[in-house]
Length: 284
Image 1 (cartoon, rainbow, N blue to C red):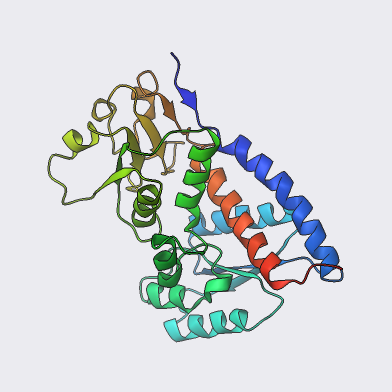
Image 2 (image 1 turned 135 degrees about the horizontal axis):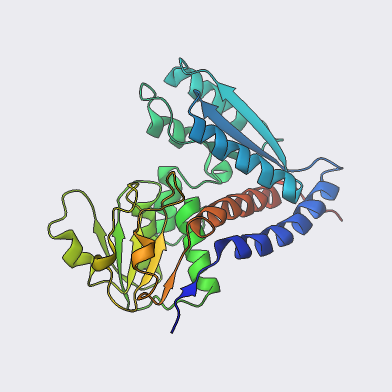
């Protein structure tokens, strides 16, 4: 039986259609002013600029306003914190996205955590992570939250399954693992110190590639019938998993591109709309 393609692009399109209707209602409620997502970028990293542009395009597709804040490479931590404070205190801004990574001389964690939780639509603060882990209301980190939405849409069973997450970053691997635990999966987090990594991955019912290295997870590591979630994207349209070697034996997989990436952006947009819905009184 052919593996199912977990089509993130198609699902993202459905989500955006719904969001456009919700944004139209919000705009009417706000007297013609659309909800605002502020995107912050520090420096001139080309990949970051591309990602911010894609998020701006998504805002336009659903009718939101994208307010782009561009800061020079030399920006200090204190200067960036001041910019975040300005957006935090601006009632017209409903969501704040600080594009990762920032230049190495900036304290990224301090800047992430300066974002008010109600505007943390990318789910990057420690408060958002803690609330998510405790299954309290919060905005989840956008990529893992998008993956969970994709798995739910395609009715991929998680309860009782062994999920192996390869990668432990604070905005992808760690929240991904916690979301899977909250869905009653049994989870192992693997990283650079994990011994016999291929043997560990071979145990998995669900493999999440979140390591940030092109085709790091090899085909022979994946067992027959596993579900493969590739959260990576690298030049040459490849992800973190050697997908060409696993398509014939896995039960389902996310394509690269067109799998996890569109869901990350759709989830960010949905959480921005949710933040606006909480802040803008409904029209009577």
